Amino acid sequence: MRVALVCDWFLPRQGGIELHLRDLALALRRYGVDARVVTTTRGPDDVDGVPVHRVRAALAAGAGFAFTPGGIARLRDVLRAERFDVVHAHASVISPVAYAGALAGAREGAASLVTFHSMLHRSAFLLGASEALFGWSRERILLSAVSSVVAAQAAQWMPGAAICVLPNGIDVPYWRMAGKAETNADEIVFASAMRLSRKKRPERLVRAFASAVRFNAGTPAMRLIVAGDGPERRAMRRLASSLDVGDLVELPGQLGREELRELYGRSHAFVLPSERESFGIAALEARAAGLPVIAMLAGGARDFIARGVDGLLVRDEPELARAISRLAIETPFRAYVTAHNRSVPPAYDWTDVAALHLKYYGEAAALRDRTPRANQP
Image 1: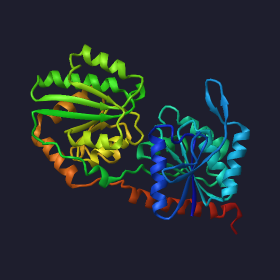
Image 2: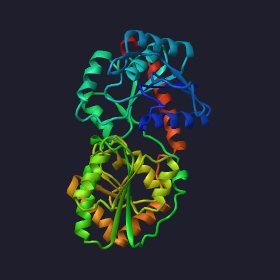
Image 3: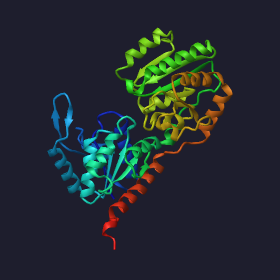
């Protein structure tokens, strides 16, 4: 089976979807699938053993790559020449390459899927417009989302559409090799990992942590370590200093997977403050490492974090502060969640996630081959 993973962005550009595509391609290739990436991002033709087809796109001044009609034709030519059996497009709300790839694949006779990777609650009406314009159902394209939250948002704006869930995956055994911090400790370390941008709301995390420190009055001692980089890093430092927790908040910058695993091994809990996490892969990695996880109820992490079992789900900043305080103070509760997370591995290992992808590739093929009712006797 030859599978094209089509996306607007790929490595060497760094981001969650880029790493996901690389890992998905490698997982599928371990199943014997000839998985390849098709993208407009410039770079090498091979990334970690994954073949990459780089489609040339026009460069618009100040706007990055512009996907023109000529670019669409070149994308169609690549899909036709490579004779892919499956075209799996990975999209945000505005993803011209992914959408064009899905449509071109369907019209070339390939089984075609689209997976939505972004929260859609504020702009999902564009999906309804795209259904009217492109006719996903008429083209017999299988629609999916990375979490139940995103699937529900897509279905709200596309009446009658069936949206399946195709989640992200992780190497569960790798993260379970993290070291084990002592449950009872003189200093409780809270870890986080995210891009330090307004969308992720890292300043909310700093404020909630400062509130928890004030409430706990120094007993036990607490520390917050936020891995990642981005435009809000300086603002976070200023805010932490203004709230008198500057010496308790560490911003080590972007960390690789080995460094993150080491951080989780010496931490006691993980916190993800963003409400617009379509999945929350960093939270899943921390959960696999055995950490209790605090995440927002509105995000995709609720698919794998059961409240009071794997961690805590909160609605707003005050609840976030109370959850941080609770995990610091209530040693028995923290010990219970930690013991559960260390002994019960989470779902979403790549072995299972890749098998689920193959299942839906089969369903997309069946959808492609299904005879329209209007032509049935």
